[in-house]
Image (tube, rainbow, N blue to C red; front, side, top):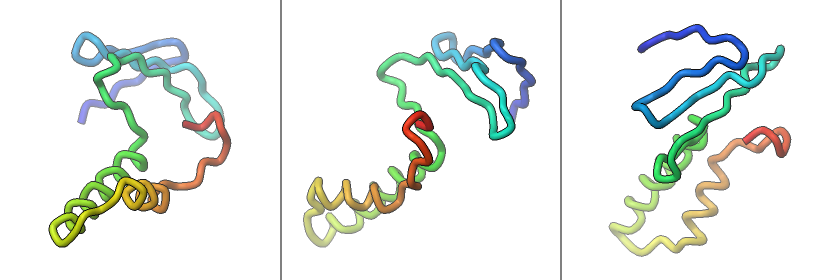
Amino acid sequence: MLVITRKLDQSLIIDGNIEIMVIGLNRDGVRLGIKAPKEVQVHRREVFDAIAEVNRAATAKTRGGALSLQDAAALLRERLPKAKKENDR
């Protein structure tokens, strides 16, 4: 793991086309701004883990029968933590 120290308004570049900038610091954490091409998926870790779990569940269920889109969406909603506020995405 590479560990980098950045200050407010400083950024780092990944693979020449993804920029991560520190846009805020407060007691609760660090706010990061991410610029990436549309084809690059960017998720918070807990969202990524929930999506992966839904995919695993869907794969397991489709082996014995079809999983509907609504069922997959319901599984994802169950596994996602409740948002504290609208801005926290």
